[in-house]
Image 1 (spheres, rainbow, N blue to C red):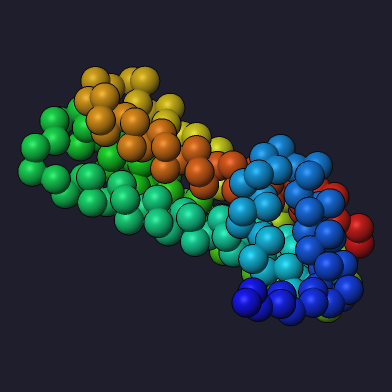
Image 2 (tube, one colour):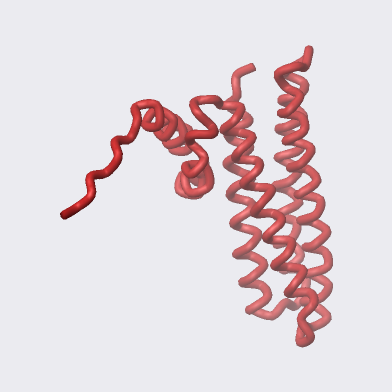
Length: 177
């Protein structure tokens, strides 16, 4: 005998639809859905919560990327070219993490701020800077002789976080204050 599924509340459906509708217009809709849909009930139908969750997902991914690249840098068999690129990349990701944290901090002060447009502009600037930092990491690959395995791992990690950052920036750009 099959168990009956618990009915999904109309409120939960509303929250899920809000996240889906919001993600469908981002640059990377499937990345957006995968990172935000699990938090639909926490986001509710609040665009500010959506943006903060998007930035939190970006921050988590950036931290994972930093960890991945740091492990690569500690490998015993890396070349000088690999080591140089990885060292620069770790710094780029650290800068990106700092930028994302600044953006989150700005958004946390948005509701109480007298100049909401200024605060929102700061969040946009910091998120945009995070994207620049992320791509700076992959730009270094072209300047050095990097082993294919290291190159693939860096690019894969960076593309994950850069797509999340891009989606977060899109969502910030469309906030109404």
